[in-house]
Structure formats: C-alpha cells, structure tokens
Length: 93
Image (cartoon, rainbow, N blue to C red; front, side, top):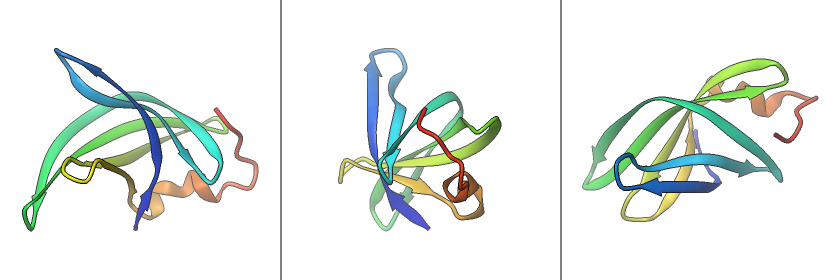
C-alpha cells in the first residue's frame, strides 16, 4: 500500500535531499536516522526509497518513504510496517 504524504525535506550539496518530517491524517511525524537509501526504476519511473527510523509512542519503527523523481511525489510505502498509523493513542511529534 502506497499512501501519499506531505513532507518537509532538506537538501545539501554533499548528501542530496532527505526527508525530515512527514504529515499524514493531520499528524506530523519527525523522522530519525536514515538507515539506507536505494534507487528504484520501474516502467521508466525513477524513485528514491528511504528507509527511516520513526519513534511513536515509545516504539521505534522502520518505515519506507519513496520519492518519485519525475512526479515530485512522496509516498509512505508498505502495509504491516506502518502499524504506527493504527495506534489509537498516537500523538504528534
């Protein structure tokens, strides 16, 4: 499941761009360290996938954010990995 999200992203000449925060369902989440990145190309569409750490309600989650280069669109990727979205006591970070 890919969910479109709004992000705040920074850019530096040495590291390129990286997501700092993302917003979904009216809540903003702060991203921790980026574990790794990879480039995907599917049917001519270039995307950069970021594996990031996210802490929510005292639990650390590993999430995937995908950036479609040509569409300039950010997506939250995965299904069960996004368990933090189903937490009834989630808070804004």
